[in-house]
Image (cartoon, rainbow, N blue to C red):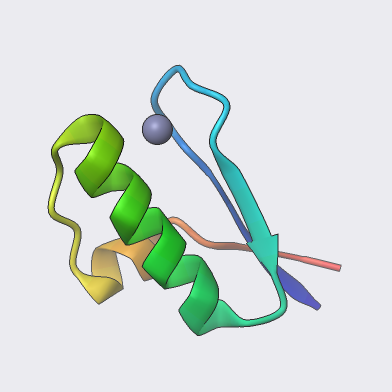
Length: 52
Ligand SMILES: [Zn+2]
């Protein structure tokens, strides 16, 4: 089982990891750096898809 997030904006950002916390951190950093958006942990968590 892995956790995956693909950015909903039109860029190629995608992260996949078995560590949910790592995925959340990367999504938050990406949103802040590229989209000037401050996401909470739960915002980032809502974007996660579980993939096998
Ligand atoms: Zn993005």
